[in-house]
Image 1 (tube, rainbow, N blue to C red):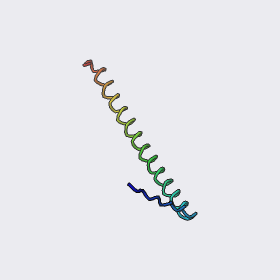
Image 2: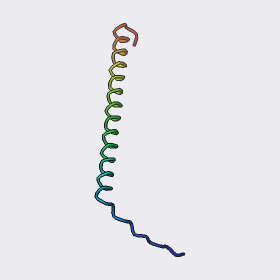
Image 3: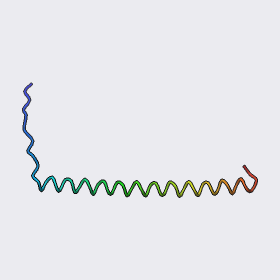
Image 4: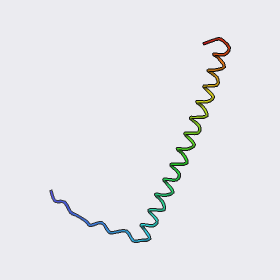
Length: 61
């Protein structure tokens, strides 16, 4: 079995900058999505806690 090796070309400075910018945008988008998910989680948890406390205060545990 014969394997051929092809050397990878080094990216040009413009390609590096474009890749870095894309990675930065992807990271920022991921952070925004994570933050929204965290906010939704905490909001839901607080809602459920309020419902539980209201049930307990009403006497039905």
